[in-house]
Length: 428
Image (cartoon, rainbow, N blue to C red; front, side, top):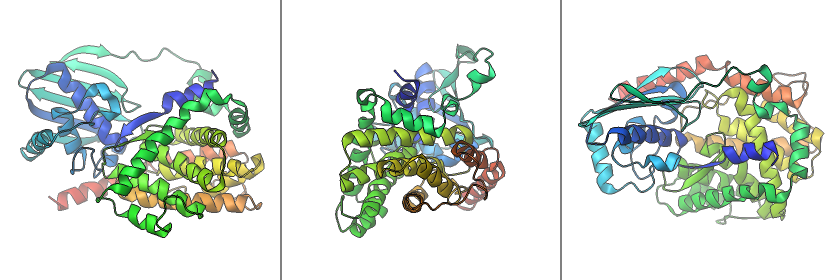
């Protein structure tokens, strides 16, 4: 199997709701499972991106939002064996138990540090003991478990690696090599990517049928009341952002995540599905385009970090989707380079202020920017690489895009956190 195929296969994962509340619930559920009993107290220490992304995010199986309720539901009802889908199957009784824990002040969450590195430390105390679970770098990567103060699991740090080994796999490739890969890889080797569309389309349907969505009905009306119309861009916006809204308000269907994010996975895929439905591209073209979308997204995200102050959904996944859309339309490598320059010069710097209703608006902006970038690039028009953060090569441009987030927007992340804390105090 091609290493790029394995990279995509390893990264694609279904996630119920926004990934961060799921990861918090998973960590708490894993800690609770170590000791059993009735919960007395839960203490969370979260890095800034984790804290921010779950701050007002909808939680599957609940009408509540935020870090405290994600932790409380993890303590009373989540199944850690399900990973990021651990909140699937939450009952009304468990919701009431979670509400009681929060209202009684038994759940606490603090921000540990401003960093794009994922960090969760969940301490759970029950009437039978206490346990701590530490997660780092990816949403379910447990690096340590302590039970009653004793370390029962410790993931060993990797041995000293060479500079070449330390470099992310995706950065060893050029855009030209990524395009060559998606055009030549055997179709059966990437057929598993089709599962992303089954999952994301089911999430969209959940959003379109729910009385809780507000953006999706308007986007549907703007598309002539049809899921698939003759207007490709409006169809793309509906399919993409109807699914994003369903995800952020906590409807009970998973998204297929990429780079640890359901919204990234949605933006990287759903507009491409719309293009294929409206223009008649084949299933094979869709799968190959999706592989390219994923890989460009990963390329940028490895520079920006998993959780940062910029909206990787719009910027990284949106750029990946735009490059793939250009490929579907027959654009050559030069056209794809122009697409990346146009995306870099337009929406780079869009902030991430958490997983919330605003993700839908950011998705709307990403689709619009992608379609404009592709339309102009296919006509030979782009922001020249002498300007702004555009580089001499597409690889440089993608690197610069990522660096705007990390280390570039560390101060922005701190300011966002200050605002969220002020809001929390003012709202009681």
